Image 1 (tube, one colour):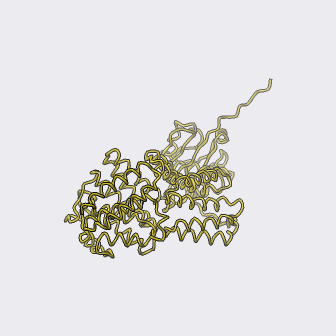
Image 2 (tube, helix red, strand yellow):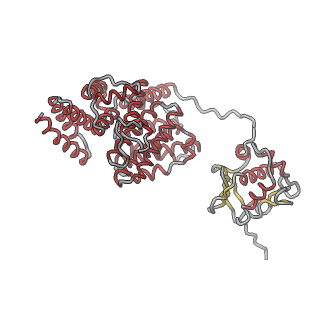
Image 3 (spheres, one colour):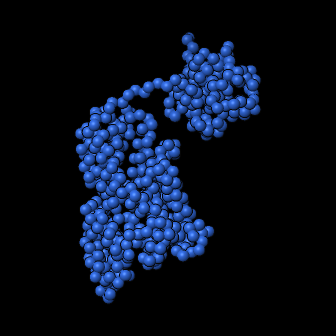
Length: 497
């Protein structure tokens, strides 16, 4: 009878920056062990690291870039980690601490080594070991059509300035010129269309774009690194859909947690978008649950996003993060999850009591200055809404606010809240159709409240009337009812005045 030889069980081993993972077992934590294995695998490819041609400790050290010395104790401790694993017999040696070393010829064929999802062979091993290698010209991608590049650049310019409908039109003009089979170029348009839909509150369009981007993700022709970045951006936009359209903060947070930290670490813009939304979602969870710990996490996430934007030199992201940090501080103070501080507090912004209304106003004034300097957000009312809310929350008259702004070197070009609001409203009059109706309602009602405080009942009455008209355009029944109730509460004050 012929003997039947069963092939040994295959083990999947991942070489990680901080350790080694064998199959589904817990990670073995060691920076040296995966590099030792990589050096032995590379030597084995070159006909070494075998029982008849073992590698000395010095030869292994030369293969690991940045390793000045490979001490015997280091080697012994690294190899000892394999004792209780399926790879206990993989690395053989005349002496475990000093070598020479070789790979077990029976166990090695049953192992599949990977680095970042790729087979641990050839150039992948050389990169992992940090070795110098000849520079090779990458395969040239096809040249983008001029019409596509021009339309995309125009859309980006308009997006940065808040010209959402013209930017959407520019993307429509770019679409016919996408090179056939170029998934990255098609995804670039999809991402921008999704950003526009999100900023307009067009959740149905955002959902359509997310569906198409998800199909692109499953296309194997997209390079691995580009696919990882695209997956992260799609996850952030999907979190916006959960939070903005469905009002579900917890699922949005779960979606954000799916983003690979390595991708965030490599892309400052992505890190800003992720930290900004995470801070907003945590703020809403903190307010809903009355949780001061979540409030602290919210400010930490927004602070990390702001830090990334500032260090990377991203003015658009910086002004967004500064405005959202300002609004979060104000909302959390209002919910009594942060200690409220007086604007005239002698301790200033570094008060041991934590951030207060003055800190919020400082960040908001910085955001305003960036918008003016870089001509950003020209069709947005959010900064003005935040400013009017903070002033009401801190019970500030315009003189006190102007004093604070002047102290920062950012004086406001107005003499009253009413004049400032009128200027902001006039500056975006040509683009008011791009402003979501809920922003228009909030702005008009805050303007009316300050107009009443300043004794202008006639303007307040007209503003309340406009707010009611805008509220009726809202699809969200709860939001529509809330704004109409606020308008009803303000109207008796205007009539009495």
